[in-house]
Length: 360
Ligand SMILES: Cc1cc2nc3c(=O)[nH]c(=O)nc-3n(C[C@H](O)[C@H](O)[C@H](O)COP(=O)(O)OP(=O)(O)OC[C@H]3O[C@@H](n4cnc5c(N)ncnc54)[C@H](O)[C@@H]3O)c2cc1C
Image (cartoon, rainbow, N blue to C red):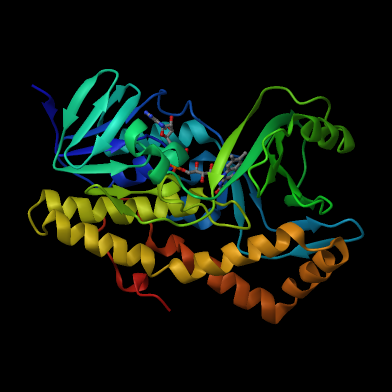
């Protein structure tokens, strides 16, 4: 007999842990890696996310400014405050708060009520797919389930001390490279990504580290990040984070949306567990909430297509334009609201979709 739970979470990273934190009862998290072992990102988020979740103790460094380096000039942008943080500590501490059980196994298929893994089959009325860009759909559903559009990035950690989040815009040759250097206390997270999904980036990473005098890159990690929102409900499951293409186009910021949509899905799931809502009602409410953010995603998606091919001098002009106070105010507000950290909480939230969830 498959073991029974109140809820099963497929994938124990940002989206999965945020969802689990909101659900009571017997919750199972399944991941192919130990909690905290699967870092793919530079782990930079708006500091408000960690403040709202009462997780500021995992911060490595706070960043007041963003610097956008194009070939001829450097543009300083004052968006909201960001920070780089310790992924392992974040995951381990959030997992401890969830009170969930954990099974280390590879998920081979997941659908409403049932998850099959290399460690056996598990059942629950609520299933949340937060297994990242691969999704938990398994071989049969994989192709349809995976996001249609993916960027690819790699990153290394090198000894360094500095300030601010730095982005470097590579020349447009049909597949522009975007580089970053994010200081995090005693090291810098240096990497690059392509919007086209081109993945042969090791030579570019070596050159970039060399240009910044960081030395040859040590251990390299990375992978795909989804950049187009898909349906957030599939086969009777909530889809959270990269499994639903929630990583923000242009910036590749995927942690904040995974946390925000993860908590919202978790709160709705909790209503199902306590009998306040039927599963179909909760799934519909979740789908509607995610769709209410669709416009922001579509704008960023179009902008990403343009930025990929924009000639270099025009890119520099774009950077100057976005830095004007009026434009920056507008961009800040829109970019924040796509996945507003205001929706995050440290405890279980009383209201699944608080007033601030209503789109502006
Ligand atoms: C190089 C790079 C740098 C990035 N930097 C940033 C950044 O600085 N800030 C930011 O906001 N975003 C960044 N991103 C994007 C960000 O990493 C993702 O959007 C974010 O991790 C999505 O969270 P998630 O919980 O949806 O998925 P993930 O973090 O990918 O977690 C998925 C989990 O599911 C597990 N899993 C997957 N398949 C299976 C399976 N079949 N069976 C069992 N378990 C499975 C994995 O082990 C993993 O733990 C970056 C991405 C890349 C590639």
